[in-house]
Length: 163
Image (tube, rainbow, N blue to C red; front, side, top):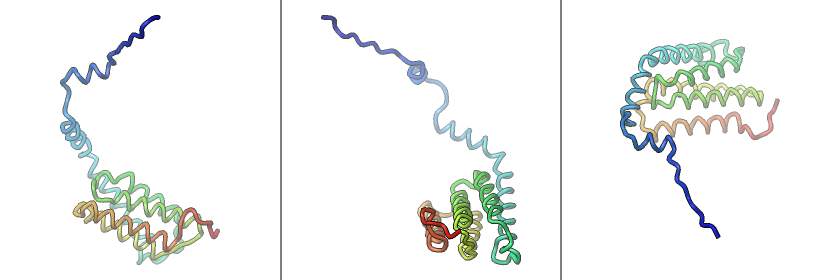
């Protein structure tokens, strides 16, 4: 009877890890932050432009907001998500996602609840200017509140639509 022989093959990754050198994880993060810094200002400009347009077209004082297309609200909110790296730890990308969800669900159900839209818009503005000062728990409470507003005012995406 023959005996089982085991072979351990050193992979290239294992060899590289044990070799040493390179940079530390903290140094890699510092370099990544430095690499993102030139993008920060253009991202803030985009976020502010989108917020201004959302407020002008869909906000409380927008006179013709009932004629505006919710698809445009969705697109503007998604642009905020795309540009949110300029505001790390603010929660604005999650609030913009919540507004996208509200717009999408509103279109699906044929409901336009302006009070829900107003709450989402004001929350976006709050997080834009104060979100980074909030603790993670405070930001999460705000975002959870947006989900509750959508659920209460427009409904659940799993429920049958009215349209």
